[in-house]
Image (tube, rainbow, N blue to C red; front, side, top):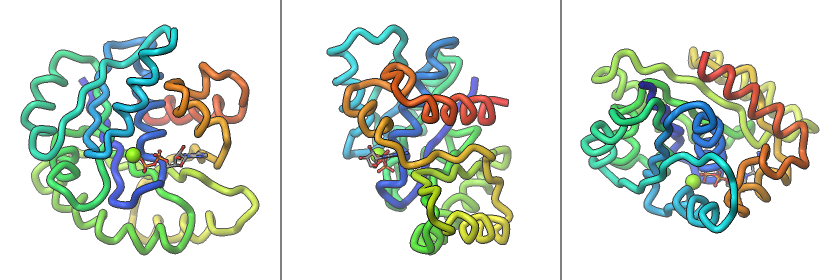
Length: 209
Ligand SMILES: Nc1ncnc2c1ncn2[C@@H]1O[C@H](COP(=O)(O)OP(=O)(O)O)[C@@H](O)[C@H]1O
Ligand SMILES: [Mg+2]
């Protein structure tokens, strides 16, 4: 039983996009729960749109907030092979609960200096969580990457200085992601952007290894 928590205190970095893709890819081969832990309930909206379509496999989706992510999340997750938590932004009790429930924390980050600056808060929360959850694995995912800029290099340097474990997979900024989420789908099901599909397959393989 593995619990993945997709976390960042910053909004708009791709948490929901990552969580929804991971949960749906896992659901193809195992019983998977998607916990929407963000009061903004974007993952739940995605699930509602999905119910109106005919996609084959879906994760079971539920909404939990605050401390319930840990208390209720724990008993719910026990009935599934994999659980993915889309943890809301800010330094909330929901974020801390997600990090205590998780075996793997995935931190999507953009590649700008602003993203690096905004990570200081998050890293403090992660360090604290590790005191109570010492086996927590933390992996950083560079997301919404613009291949035309040099920002990625600076971000990689910053992550190295922080001794953070960066996934090799880079998720680029692609219309396919936005479109897929809006249709209650994932990029595989839209099937139009081969690069997006390859990125997500590589991400899944890396993160489940
Ligand atoms: N790789 C990507 N390429 C293009 N658009 C993306 C990508 N990842 C996320 N987005 C878009 O950016 C916005 C924020 O993404 P989202 O996953 O909701 O982030 P968060 O949950 O961290 O706030 C959404 O409109 C989403 O469709
Ligand atoms: Mg979100």
